[in-house]
Amino acid sequence: MTVYVNIFLKNTTERETSILIETDLSESELQKKVDEIEEKMGSEDYDIYDVLDKLEEMGIISESQCDT
Image (cartoon, rainbow, N blue to C red; front, side, top):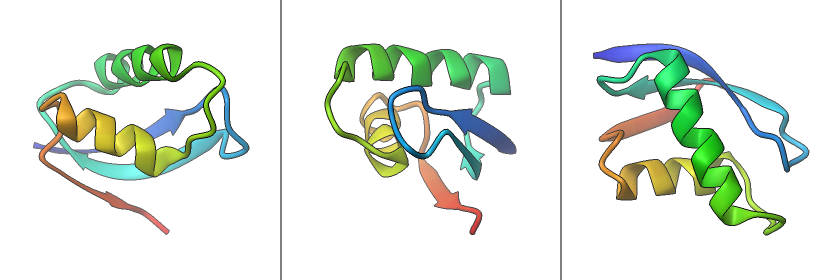
């Protein structure tokens, strides 16, 4: 299914990104996964595309697109 979610990033200048994501997870489950990814990345410089790449590597999403 495709869900429209707001992903909140803690350690970047992009604080919130609205995005369409194809996944079976709910918005809250997806946000938890994003939080886990951010913890692993620590103070590393990253953006929403880095997070999406990690979600794809984990098999959580199969396709994503930014809503610009």
